[in-house]
Length: 185
Image (cartoon, rainbow, N blue to C red):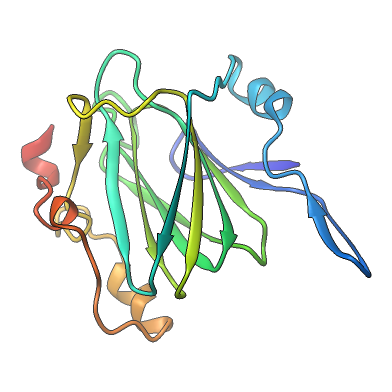
């Protein structure tokens, strides 16, 4: 596995070695020793989540606020999504900035997102399956949501949607009515 840092410290893209033969493909999606070595502590999985999304669905921007926080290791087992990380750590040099990467079942990439960093994605195809390994269990009292289309963040969702033939976004009410970046922190 090769880990490449994104522009937001505490986020990386993982590219596994993919072995192909007449039977199909095999790759290691998650390897705790590689992740632990990279972050200098134990990435202990406490919850595993999976979502199924139609083309045009935006999920997020979500993060966990609290002393412990929640780190995530996100991968794609079917379809494709444009994955976005947003730095929500007030003391960070990249506070309020975002970065992105295409994650798909074809490119086998995964994204590691440490505590204090918001996460969202735009599904680029129908039946996209995203898998999340999380270091903390879901706690609604600590769960936070920013509106992914907040103009203060200026995330390029519309540009990416246009490039992939997406005319309308599909958002949950929770995401559509999420806080604005300036009011939330």
